[in-house]
Image (cartoon, rainbow, N blue to C red; front, side, top):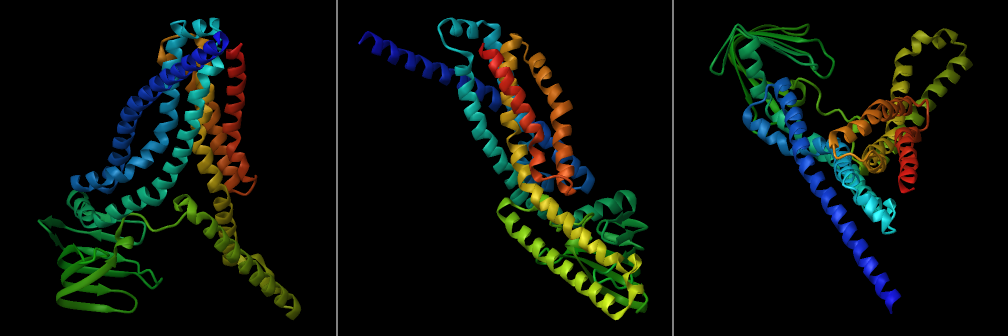
Length: 407
C-alpha cells in the first residue's frame, strides 16, 4: 500500500510539474507572439501600403489577411524565445537540480513542451496553407479593388503611373478627380500593337462589378497601327483590373497554390510536359525522316525548348513545395529541441543571452541550409527531401544536447 501510495503521489506530482511548465511556456509564448506578430504585421502591411499607395481603409482591410502570413514567420522564433525564458529561469533557480535530486531527470521536464511543439508545428504548417489559400488571395483582392485610389495617388504625387502589364499614364495635373491632359499607353493582352491615347481630360472609376478600371476620356486622340484619329466628346475605355494593377496578381506560382490543390496541379503539369515532349519528339522524327536537317538547328527550336524548360521548372517547384511547407512548419520543433537543453545547460536567467546563443547558430546554419535545399530542389538538382536538411541537422544537435543535459 505504501509503495502504491508513493507511486500515485509521484504521478500526481509529475503531472503538476508538467502542467506548471506548460503553463509557463504557453504564457511566455502567447505574450511574445502577440508583440512579435504585431511588429511583423505592421511591417508587412506598412510595406504593402507604401508600395501600392493604399488608403487607410484599405490598410485596415489588409490586416486580417496579413495575419496568417505574419504568424507563420513569428511562431518558430517565438516558441524558441519562450522555452529559453522558462527553462533558463528554472535552471538558474536550481529547480532542475532540485528535481534531479528527487530522481526526476531533466528529460521529464522537456517532454511536455516537445509534445506541444509538435502540435504547434502542425498548426504552423496549416498557417502556411491558410496564408496562401486565404491570406494572399484576400490581399490581392483588396489591392485590386483599390486600384482606382492607387492610380489617383500616384498621379497626384508623381504625375505618372506605370505597371508591369504595359499600362502607362502621364498627366499634366490632377484637379479633384479630373486628369488634365492625360496621355495613356496600353499594351492589349492579345499581343496586338500598343494603343496611345491623348485627351483634354479624363476621369477614373471602377465598373459596377469592380472587375475593370473605367477611364472616361473627353476629346481624345487615338494612335495605333490599326487606328488613328480624333474622338470628340466622351469615350469610355475599360481595362481589366488585373492589367491595371502595378503587378500581376493572378499568377499561380507553386508557392501560391493551396496544399489540397498541389497534387492536381502536379498531375496537370506532368501531363502537359509529357504531351510537349511527345510533340517535340514527333517533330524531330518527322524532320529526320524528310531530310529537313536545317530545322534541327537550335535556333529553330528556341521557343519550344523554353516552353519545355518552363514546364520542367514548374514540375520541380511543385514537387518541392509540400516538402518546403512541412519543413518550414516543423522548424518550430527543431528550434525547441535545441533551445530547451541549451537553456538548461547555460543556467542563466538572462533570456536574451540564451536566446541569442540559440538563434545565432540557427541564423548562420539553419536558414542557409534551408534556402540552399529549396534552391536545389526547385532546380531539379536534388530530391525534394533535401529541404529538410536544416531541420534534421538541428534535431540531431538537439538530441545530442538533450542527452548531455539529461546526464
